Length: 308
Image 1 (cartoon, rainbow, N blue to C red):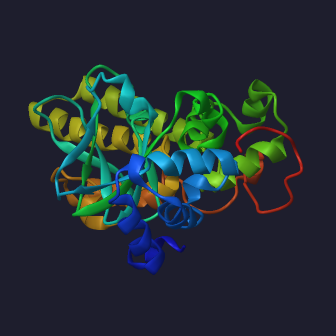
Image 2: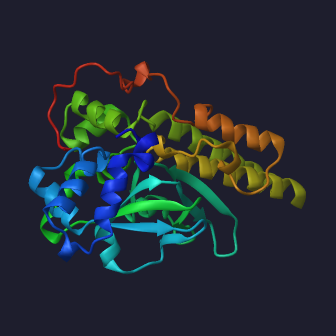
Image 3: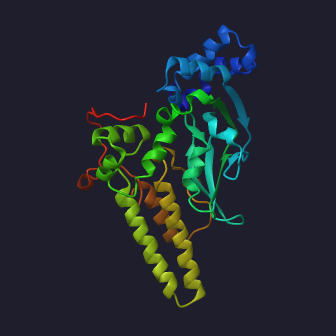
């Protein structure tokens, strides 16, 4: 099922009717409709038939109202660690705040066919001052999938976001060094990257952003007046936001200009942020980085490695 048609398909309508029945009361016909619909969802692409059936047995649907918070980074309930959402209709955004009273930044977007879970928030909460939450940007229909305890270990290599987290730990080094650290050949890493929508390894981009942050910090320290320091701090926040965006799956980046960044910015800063998304100076835009051997071309990938 194509993501843009998922929520309007007849398969979804039949699945939705089956999901309205309590899990313990579902018959074979209900399970057939739910299972059939699941075959068009990327989340289920790399799992076994037995796993698919078990997940479909407990699958539920949830309707989210616009601006409704789905989960918050301060939630301590371990149960949410085993719950995954798949967006069927609407859009859900990942948001961060640098402090309780600070501005809200919309970092990435999950649209029809995309999956999200609490594990995404961990990638953003890199310091005690940063708090993430996931909220509905529009009225949204989702299916909710609970991972049974016996599958938790297996889903570490079968689910897309967890593999992305594993890769993200090595974004600060070259792809060659990452391959060595992971004990995998280059072609296997490139294959996994393509599955995640990573067109180029972000090592050099992150290094460029880090250099810009250091430069801004130096200017802040030597600024002669409060107005200059304030402007530089605002620019530094936007650059740090850019850095956060580089650590997430680029296929989930918010492309809608109206939600790129919530706080008001001057024209120069706004242009810098929008340019960063397309690859200048720190974006994850298309094209290969041949000098770093990190271009993820669509050539053959015959190397080993996990990832489902």
